[in-house]
Length: 110
Length: 493
Image 1 (cartoon, rainbow over the protein chains, first blue to last red):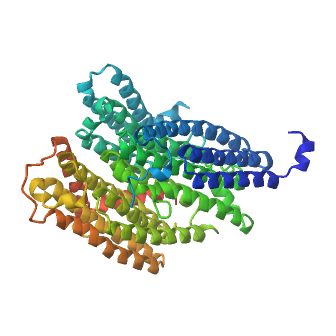
Image 2 (cartoon, rainbow over the protein chains, first blue to last red):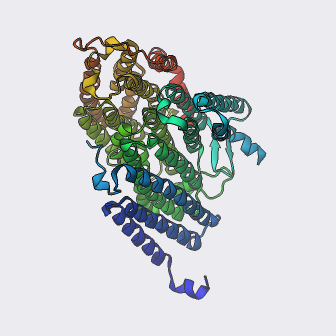
Image 3 (cartoon, one colour):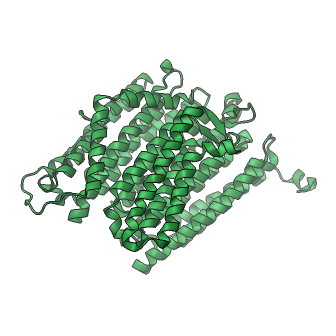
């Protein structure tokens, strides 16, 4: 990042973007009916976390600024693993029900 | 570096055994697959042996540049998880017939989940905590859906979706913690920057950011601890997943979650810092809500496994009383924190015993409905007796270890001036007696037809007896366990 850009973008700006992304992701994952839609919301939340980590590691005075970037790498890798398992389970559910709508997956309740 | 790997040895041994099982699974004929459980048990034994000789060599170590800790806390939980995994493997030998040709993968996944829990108890860096948390979670998502039947898949996908949301929430909290401290280390033995250091030196300027981070962390870990309001998945998963997996989840996963919460909040945030009172109050409220909701919901259950699910939510509320009562100074023994650890240890015996008894009965009758438990004591006396002892222990009645656990943790609550919370907990104990003892009475009712003998397999009998013996022995002689728990939390003081 060049110093010109840095002067005009403050830490708060990036944090607000992160918070917005996180809120949108949380809203999507709580309001969607479709299991795959929920997963897309979760991906949005994870990317919001990455933005926040990178912002902090760029702007905060710290003896170990790389920690945040390393963390973001781990988040990306593990999100991929989680998505793989999620899609496999979605297929398993679809085989039984012919749907991945969370409302209609209701054998277990109360 | 080599020395650090040596300290990680117990975890590596378990992971190597898991890898060997996956490889051996390719060549072992299908009807011999059960013997792979032997490899798994050998791996756990190797892990325990490695730990024992590590204790003899170096007891207090912070390694991988303060990412991991080898202290009494890690040691305690490592042995706990090895024991839990071993018991689950032994008890599942009969159940695994339902997995067809996937028995090997089942054993391997149980080991990987166990390795994740062991890592979790030893992590003291946010990155390590997150990786260990996901290692446990993702394997447990797979295990929950292992039967691939209708209910199992449903339970697994619910567990996974909620779990994924909760890990994103934890991460957001961790991001703010990193922003405050500038590092992901909870403590720094070399005197460098650390989260504990930043909080101890901080002032009220960082307080609001810390509170945000604290709430996010508690919400995400709360999912793993299965406390209200993050408990929705618990009864579904306990009912829908294979019974050995439910046993592993209800004990191992919960213990690991409480271990990491003790690390982050007690070791990281600290009990006597300016945010100490805030997080203790938060956990006190969560404790009251969890106990009440868990017990009231359990009253109306008709399925034993669902009942145990709600009961485990209520028990998590009891653990939280200890967290709320934490103080690092009182008598130098940290009564609240050691109460949590002691309670978890007794709960491990108790809940494993209860789930194994349910599994032994369910293997034969094919039903987990409470109405089918009528008169089961005549057809399967051992399982019924063990289940009764465990239910007594869950209620907190003598002659069981659960009695001392509740006494200890309530005492910690009283010493910390949480009289209102202890009152709620005692009232809840009364409510819980209704359904725990109701289930016990149902088993001993006379009108069940004698029917055929439902004797469980020999290995199942052995673990049943072991669990019940543990519950009773630690009633008569709880001192060693209490001392071990106090030593474990002493690592933080």
